[in-house]
Image (cartoon, rainbow, N blue to C red; front, side):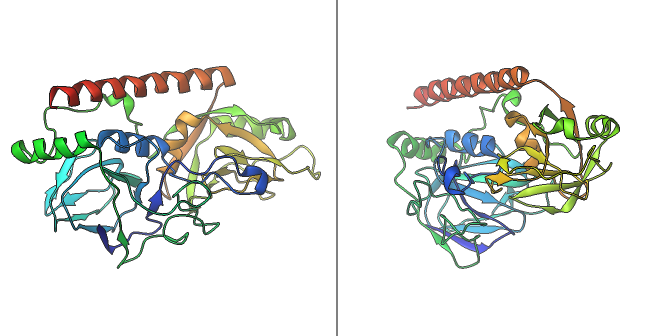
Length: 331
């Protein structure tokens, strides 16, 4: 069991979401930073989509038993019983120890995977918490103090690895992730994006400003979308549009002219013009931004976006192979 002593805003149980329900108006939801969740799970021997915790600053958790855990994603000054807890490393925690997340150094969402995964009921095939729809997790809500989370049965090798760490050290100090596998979170990232279906709806000077100027993240940023502030985007003519499909990464422009980038809990249909779509490989950079951070968009092609995704997938396959070899040596 894991007890929640204190919960940061929007901290919740997440996995890779519930695909296949868009026609019913239900978003995929799941982890905002899917890459960080997958890495954390791999490090403790879980399936990549196992249920884990998406955590924000201010969270405190007590472990009721020994566990093998890994923390990935944002650097939130994590400490375990007063000692820094490293990111992207398998770590053994002991019964009774408390993990605390403090001030953010980079990013805003961290992912804690526990060997065996979190054992909660499935809701439409997923344990992911959709805060907007009230699905999954703990009754479709964020974590709160007093919650207790059950952990599933870990694999034999994970149990053996925990014992191996207990004999030598808390963490696998002789091994580290390839830095190329990790998103480079920034306070001013450049996001690759392809032109959207309605890009031509905008005046030429607005299109040029969108691809040239920086936009600031406003306080209206959550798991539904990230509202930006900057150069106003003006359409060539005001006219009604038919609603069309939208996905995370779509950049919509409401009547006020300020762009809104949709995130994991966004609606599945929208009637605002879509000026661009952020490449999926750069979505982790978007969801780790905080109010006041800046973002720019770099024009790319669908082919270039797919190639970037393929390169990242190849690096993930390499990580799987490396972890298998490393574990085999310590079996």
